[in-house]
Length: 417
Ligand code: GUN
Ligand code: FE
Image (cartoon, rainbow, N blue to C red; front, side, top):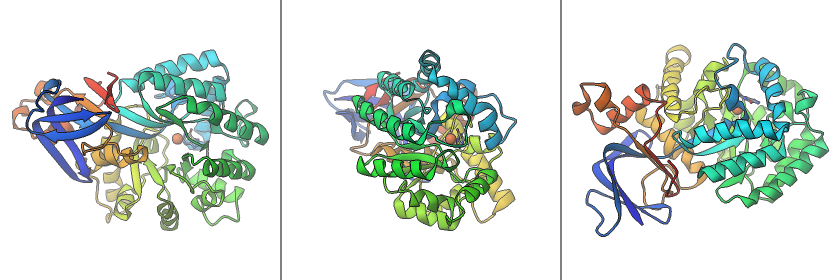
């Protein structure tokens, strides 16, 4: 048992900050045990002074192999970007030495980022994806990692036969339980990359082993047209995933920029999550997702970098990009969808996405002790600092210092930074 002292800020409900200046956070057995304005007698307490103490942030959708080219190749939209850059570069992860170098750099940067837990895509390669899991585990990060499944519409160098895709997925799933905190997730890339036979087999294995699923949905108009051509009898892209049994367990659908109301009904009936990836959606010219609509409907929603769609690992950038893009949707597309407030975007990045991992992303009793300690950058950067509230200091941090490192980072009560 131990305690932290500092300026505590968190959200329990969307749009409503809770604050405790010079507060105390009691951690027991990896979980938040209590929040108090008084010290906990007889408990070892680390005093972080005027620094901000917030819950961990959660990246619901990120491609680990793409981190090596995050910030490059931003001139193309999705399908061209995949063919020209992403697929040839992911193919290089068949070389375990290459994969090791790339994944070490990724995991090291993720460790020092604001992300406590993430849902991660590897590549089709079983051994390098298992190696990625081992690195994340070693770094003290938690979350899910998937071996990507792809058996059509990609170059020979990044395509499996259907039989190999199923066999390697089972081989991956048999090895993956060796890790305690980093768990496997079934990962069909998206419908254009997977035959119906493979999608059905993956849906079946997810159900039999009660595994979560992650994939892409309704990201780009050209992609959606292609899915219609590939599956002319499906009512919609989401209905196709449903028909393959890929919405029967806990599922993350990345993007959902162009999702229809009927498809939202489908996702909602299964309790599926949308990983809203505003930076990626702008970089790849995908569009502006109706995130306010997701929130109004009560769809489970979190934020995601979708690196290398997003060029930064910073969840603070995702928070501010989610706000900015919601303003554009409101102004340019649909003025009934109000822009996000900072407190709402913070909720999506913390408790909203965190709920995919269990009780995570808040300072309520029994929640995982995922904790970030941040410098109060306002005191360095603006003469207004003494007049600012704690949420204003946090907003200032998000916009002015989104690429800083946290001073300390705890995941499930264990200090990793
Ligand atoms: N759809 C299928 N694969 C990908 C990918 O790697 N990135 C993004 N943004 N969308 C995808
Ligand atoms: Fe993606």
